[in-house]
Length: 314
Image (cartoon, rainbow, N blue to C red):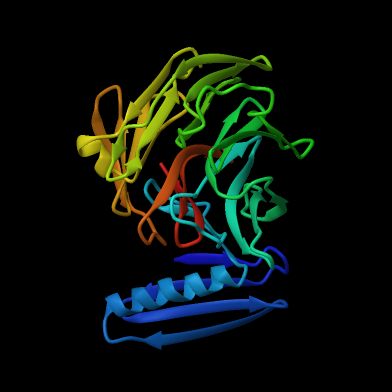
């Protein structure tokens, strides 16, 4: 069953499949209307249900499922404006900030945005980014750190202000075009132009230098801080790990999510056992995933290249 609501006007749409029949119930201006359509098979009916849900999401509806079980979707929001590889998002203080590629204006300028969502999926604000292409977004304390086309910015959701962290720093090389940002608690580590820095207590300190290793002319670099923010791991993805399109750790470091070919695998790192596997919806080729707690529930948040932001109960 799919329960959709237009948060702007309160209109609702409930979809469910019974055998080969798609049943729709719409509620507009307090008036209810029910329709049903029979298909040649249960599979065709299910496909029609997914198509109708997607069309409704693009019209501004939000799919909510408060009773979602592990592996099921609890929220779908259409964001749109995807760009291959730039699918960044981060949670902060009960809200979610999701990257949206805005497109080109006259003269060739590109406007990109952060979409500010509350826990219900309602769009609270559309924030213009100072640079296009948000490769990564991470939360440290009450602020966000964003990799905007290989420049690292700090964003304060309370004031709405962006700070370019490259200003005031000296770089030895400008040829290195890889970058990353990662965070834990109140500490962030970031890299650009061949140098790695840490930011803690408002102070930026140089940590190390790096040089890209190329694979098919594409450097694949990832980094993470431990749960205490005291140790940094930089790594070049290779072997089987390089086949995964994305992976992420839970905040307490107890669970790992591996994303591969539109499917999520949740691993318990204490027992090294597979806890859960489920299909991800509205994915063409790529998505980005993170563990996020929302309304007291544990979720895997996913931003897809088909333009959708979702929460899956884990």
